[in-house]
Image (cartoon, rainbow, N blue to C red; front, side):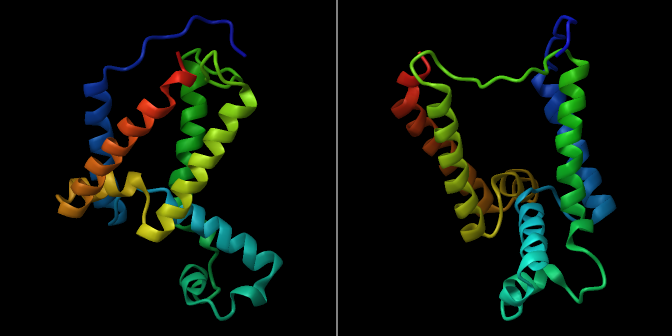
Length: 174
């Protein structure tokens, strides 16, 4: 999409430091940390309520997101955060000369197979997010910053599981 040469990536230590400042600002300004799953739930509940409001009438979980009906769940801080992350990533990619429509995959897997793996992994993570009552970003960033033992144990398990899974599917990438 762009003809300019790609700029180098940020130093990961500087990027981590800036992310920490963003997390601190979120705590100070909004009174809560960062996360994504609450935003997705707000969007799904709002969409479901728009097409089948009776379906959610007796669902206390959904009603917690709908509130008293005076304000849209789409105005929740986390929804605005996620929209900002998507737009910020897009603008950053364009400005850095790295934006292009492609599917990252290894030579031994088809584009359809790669997308199937991605969709399957995303579906599993989405289900697990609701079971765990939070996403990995919320666990790692917010829970880790609050020194929650459960968050640290969870993240160690996530990395161990990712390394084990990578070993199983690495033949698709080499």
